[in-house]
Each structure stands twice: as C-alpha cells, then as structure tokens.
Amino acid sequence: MAMSRIPYRDTGFFSTLICDLVEKHPALDDMVSRHPSIASFGPQLKEKGEQFPAAHRSVLTETLEKQYIDLPFSEEVSANITLLKNKSTFTVTTGHQLNLFTGPLYFVFKIISTINLCKQLKERYPENDFVPIYWMATEDHDFEEISYFNFHGKKIKWSKESKGAVGRLAIDDLKPLLDLFEDSIGTNTAALQLKEWINTSYRSSASLAEATLRLVHQLFCSRGLVILDADSPNLKQLFTPYVRTELKEGQCEKSVLATIESLQKNYSDQYTPQVNPREINLFYLTDEVRERIVRTPKGYETVESKIAFSNAEMEEEIKLHPERFSPNVLMRPLYQEVILPNLCYIGGGGEIAYWLQLKDYFSSQQILFPMLLLRNSAVLVPEKSAKKINKLKLKQRDLFLKRTPLINKKIRQISNIDLDLQHLKQKLKEQFDELEALVNETDASFAGTVAAQKQKQFNGIDALEKRLLKAQKRKLVDHVQRLGELHETIFPGETLQERNNNFFQFYLAHGEDILALLFASLDPLQLEFSWIELP
Image 1 (cartoon, rainbow, N blue to C red):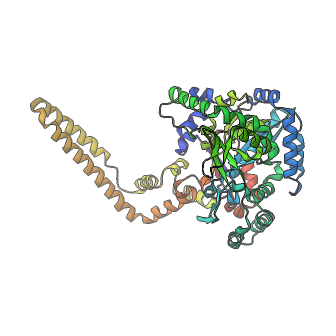
Image 2: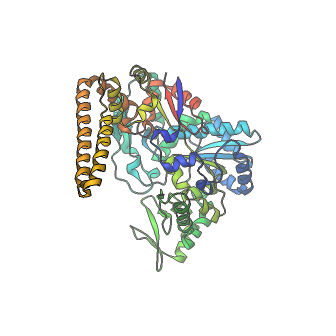
Image 3: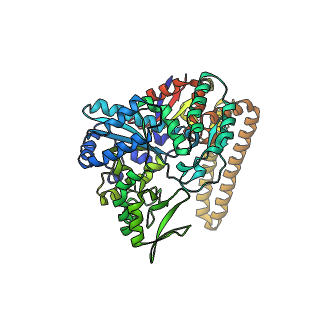
C-alpha cells in the first residue's frame, strides 16, 4: 500500500470556509471552542467534566443498555457502556443519516476517524477513558436522501411512500431489493459474510433504525463503537428545559442570526450560512408525522396537519410526551451535548459549516461547545488504476482536475506538435499595442474599432486552438478513452469517490483487509486529504 496526503485546498473539492478553518483563519477563532490538537483536548475534557451532570450519565447508560439488549453481545461495546457511568469517561461523536447499506463511503471514514481519535486520546490521557459514539439520525424525515446507495455505478433504490421519522419506517417491503442485491454480489468469502450481515440486520429487523443499528454494530463492535438512537423518551426528558426555552424565547434564531452577521462582518462579506434558523427550531414528532412547530396568536400549531396547542396545552404535552419534540438541524447539536459527556464532534464539511454558526447559541444555554474536527477524507485507488497512472506518467494532482482539463493537458503533453497557441496571442498583443498608440496619436475615435479587431483575432486563435486539440484527440482516441475511464474510477461523475461509492463495493474486493487498511491509514488529526493506493 502506498499513501500520500494533499492539502484540502489543493484538491478543489472543499469550500473556502472549511479550508480556512483547517488552516486556522483568525476570523474563525471565535466560532470554535478550540482548534483540534491532541494537547487542546486537555482543557476541553476538564471543562466538560466539571459541567456534565452525573444524573445524565445514569439516564444515558440505562438507555444504551436497553437499546443493546437484543443485539449480539460485544465485550468491547459492553465495557464502553459501563465506562460511561464514570465521571472520568468522555465521548467523541459522529453522526449520520440511516442510508441504506451505510450509503456513501465517507460514512465509514467518519466512524473510523472517531474510533481512531479515541485511541489517540487514551494514549495521551491514560487517566481518562474515551468512547466513540455513532449518533443515528433516526428522527430525520428526508427519506429521499437515505433511500438509495450507489454500487458499481448503479443506483439501488428503495421505492416507498414515507412520512415522519425515517428511523421508525417499517422495512418489510425491502425484501425484493435485498434479494436483487444479494444475487449480484457473488459467493466469495466477503460476499457470504455480507449476506450474513444482511440476514441479521435488514432481514431480522422491524424498523430502519433497528436494521441500521444491527448492521453498523456488526461492522464495528469489535472496535468498541457505541451506537446511540436518541429518539428516546428518557433522553428527551433531559432536553425538556431547552425545548421550553426555545418555544418561549426563540433564542436559537437570535443567537445564530447574530453569528451570521458577525461572520459576514469579520470573516467575509461573501459568507453564506449553511443553514438559516427559524423562529422555532423544533418539530412535532409522532409515528405518522414530523412537522415544524410555529407560533400562533393562541399558542402553537404544526405547519401541515395544523395540530394546535394553547400555551398551557403545550406545557402539558412537553411534560407528558417529551419524545414528541424533535430538534431540527440547528438544535440537534445542543441535544447531543446535553445528553453526552462529549468532547468533540467529527463531521463532514457541510456539517462543520453549520456547527460554526452555533457557539454563541451554546453559550446562551450554558452548555460547553464541543471541539469540531473535519472527518478524514480519502480516495481509494485500485491497484490496476495506480499502475495506469504510472504508465500514463500522470501525477496524483493531475487527477484532481476536472475530466476535460485533464484530458486536454495530457493530450498536449503526448502530442508531437505544439497545440498551445497562446504565444501567438502575445505577439498579436504587442502588434495591437503599437496600433493603439498610433491611433491615440492620430484619431482616438478609431480606438473602439481597433479593440474589436483585437478581440476578434484573439477569439480566432482560441477557436483554432480548440479545433486543433479536438483533431488531435481524434488521432489519440485510445488515450482519451483510457484517461476518461481512469478518471471515472477515481472520481466517479467528477465528484469525490467517497461521496458516491458504497463501502461494500470495496469490502467485496478486499474483505476484512479493507477495514484494517483504513484504520491504519486514517489519522483524524492529520488535516489533509489522503490518497490511498490499495494492494
């Protein structure tokens, strides 16, 4: 295996905001608690330890024990849940939607980043314990986003009518899709293992939340990953003070709008928020619906079903049914930090972007803001592709170009003629500079005519260069095809592989070795993009 790293900014796939955060732009310092480093976790765990209530630990561990009661026993997971009862134990958390079969590859990267960071923290702070948490987004209601996964260039989709939280969805109608997928994956050792996992997860579960819990548990239980479904009445009870505050005061909107204004003033006037807050950032959740709560002259109601509450009725509903109040994307982080002894959230660029809007809101609620860490990001290069790259004498960074610029660059390199005509434009410029000087000395009214003629000549050279390049591509059609196929393998659809391909595509080819390789390769505190060549 060969591996190298590339600065995020140099890949062209990460936003300016995220690149600036990784590079510690001073205007973003106030948006984070601390920039992540192994040393900066010391004061973070001290502050969290002083603030996190012992009673919350008891509720958390009791809830986890109930959630795991019917799962295959894992000594590592059981030990970690027990450790969470101790005030010296902290968590590192990542979260993700309930995508079918784990969805895009970066889901696995997130979890490995989280587990590896806990291991590093234990080595640095041996007097403490650190538990990796995967927060299942069971209350999310965007079914379209989680209803498919890409496998060897094909979209495998679950067609279903859905309302309400996806975690509560029944999955009895998944059987035809499971049959189709299993028929396509063969019978090698890895395929047989995957079929067993499917049998003990999707084929043995009543809901999507249960199936996802079982599948991810089987993948990572030996590494001690604790999976949390926070759609729980007992956990929601801990959050009710913040629900009441949000309904009465709308502090989330006030704080987040102030942060957005600050970022636009002190960081960049081009800054655009990842998520815009609402007057009330809560949903009303039942088995049938997950709908926004809005304020009315008489109290509150839900936006679609128009379920209405007076102020007194809403207070009674919170008291009797705390599980019916679901935080939206901006309040969910607060819920997480209320119920977990958490030090750090590991997320993708889009997630970190909206977390950066929240520090002042956390302060208003007197909850410690966690450290934010961009998850590991990588491309997995098959052995055959690596050999082709070497044979074509390509550099790794060449592959990060879009497909057409990459092909054009390579065709120019291997052609036995010079296809770059830009030197002709320079000569023309010199000639037109002389002509413009002459016009200025005689009759300046001809300046527009000269400028138009100059542009016409430049356009003609550009057009001729494109035609010559197109003609050369026809002569070198085999090179063009090979470059296109190679680029598609590494950057499918000209996007990052991790946002498109599914993990099990690699698992079927490499078995358990692929997990071992990723655990060995992905360093959460090494803040660069990883290029990993597979053996």
